[in-house]
Length: 420
Image 1 (spheres, one colour):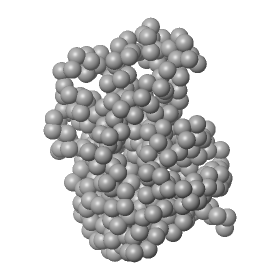
Image 2 (cartoon, one colour):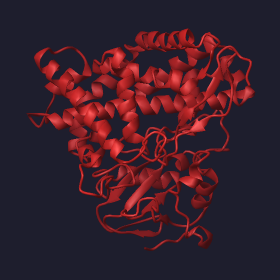
Image 3 (cartoon, helix red, strand yellow):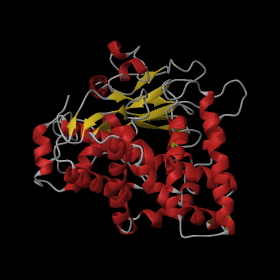
Image 4 (cartoon, rainbow, N blue to C red):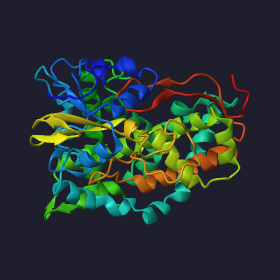
């Protein structure tokens, strides 16, 4: 491999979870941005896998994201090609049916099937239902914990976005929690507290797929106006989607609608609660909430990276990239690139402009639900601060152990103040 990074970084494995125990290793990424070329890591935690290039600078991330002909999304968006090396069924094989793991032109045709449901105008039609869900979740949490001391992630964060996207898909609200469990067990495969072994990922899918199978068959027989019906009735190139494509499209929408908004909201609220000056700016209305949302997303992108695979030999940032090489587009690094953002390590809701890469680095894979997520986050911040102006942290947060998921597992809070 041809690397041009500094000698002291040469043996560094960016995927080493030891670097991530307190969140993304921002000091490491700062060093990598300052170094020449790209950095190569061996992906030491997965002995059967080849290593990967770290793409850490804003402009390089954007270049990779825009060039789908040279840098493909096929096979996997994570750094591993397989989770099952023993010949057993592999969940990554199922992932091939997801839009996020495909390139144009099929990616574009699949995205067009549901794009209308996620336009800013259509998203506004869900505003009151979002408010209702946010307040319903807080009411239920207070019924179970009347003193208001709860976990912002587990008691609130996991429920709001799953109900919002669940409603759009036509999932009964009482089933939303089960769907969250299934999706969490597939995406948090690096955290042994959430996924005891890699076989658990396939077991979760084996429980999830029959549930969606039943929904799909019901919508074929009894169409409604939900997204599941839209997927069943949709056609690409004059052909209906294959059953596996419908199931995995459903899965993708649940994961994206659940993981991303939950991660950004809970992390952003923790940032606010740790910084009285920033909280006062937001609470006083000194800046619009739309602007606050953008800083939430910049500072805490829900997914630390997305992977691409080189389709041919090429050169990027002075490094020779071979056909088949993996590249990690580190959004957590691009969003703190000093050449683009002033004082990028500072959480500042006054930041404007804010051209972050939290909804992807550009190109065809720009987040389908960005408009919906922005509205949901705005309303969630608004309702939280309206109802709980004395909200305070009540302990240290605990992070999910992952290089892919940039989120907390627990954030203890006191809704009525009196922090611990």
